[in-house]
Length: 345
Length: 134
Image (cartoon, rainbow over all chains, first blue to last red; front, side, top):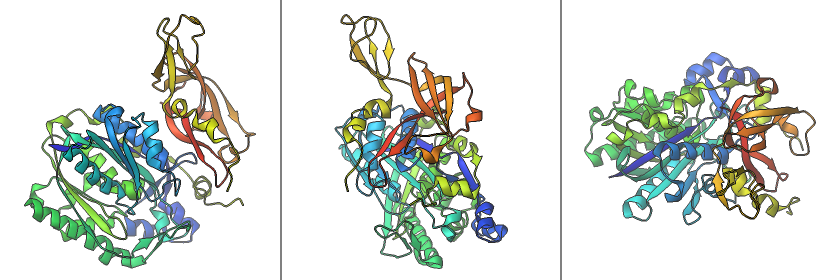
């Protein structure tokens, strides 16, 4: 039996309210917050980036899983905001968690789903006996062009998962769905991503999330009724709720993982932070469905079942909710400074 | 593009900066951070072994920096503290995610992993421990 042995979340403490961003750009705040279902987003401090967030999440995962970092034999960091274009974030994480240098590591990029792609890689390596434990991390300090629709939700945060034997949550099965869909991209050297506006909906998010989830349900012979908790990638609160409706999933099965409302869209961290919050509150024997989405475009679906090993794990490290509750508000000017949106040269 | 600052200077200190790796004298139990080559008490009779420090401690004393050195201009006012770690050593580090008026002597802190500095727009980014309120 293989699956998640330990998990850890990290969300920076700063928040900016969506209505503060709307005020600056002359938009009606209620229109924006009602349209997105998001009231505020998490903002990384000036001294935080994808590497620092990944390290904090990774340390929480090690603490929660009580895994010796020397036994981690693979580390993957999925993000679209790696601090360097060339120089791996994963190598910094490896060194900071005190893992052995005799391991494989790499940075992954698939818009918002690179962290779940890493989970599939770790599962394959653990199952085949290549590694005892693999670690995958999904983190972003997402950038939205000032004034763009994405700026209201583009947030910072991440989650780390250790995959191995004797899991707290068994990964029963996983599958993916990938097509070339130009819904959202960032070219080499471009500071901010571009997107296709409404094109990000039907042909991108909904098609991939729904098709991938349907494929997993059919492959595993599972019905929506058998599942206790569902997490979909959360670009806002409306998209996952609508995808759930299309699949006949009742809203109460989405609520626990819907972290986007108060921290925004943490991109590669999004579905994984939802999963971390669900696991924090899970009891043995719960069935969990996760489907990520990455623009470009693709989805990874996972069917998990919690085991007796999960009892008592949540409190061994700070919970996702404790990070969500810990917050300090910024005004737009300070937010623009610490996210380096003000140019000095 | 050439870099301006020494790469090896920071690289050499990665274990202590990333993991709070100090050392402990197996003879007298004294803990050192940064790690020492020789126990200050036992001298040649001491045997030093690596020791990873837990990162928990309290503010022994602190100052708010308002006239920063180059590279720290966008972080002012920031707090620089001497922290007394649970294992014993006193260690100098920045306290982050706080305003200076929120810091007090005796305040419990724990270490976190943060960006410290970067060598201009094209150089390397240096990471290390900082402290936050525990």
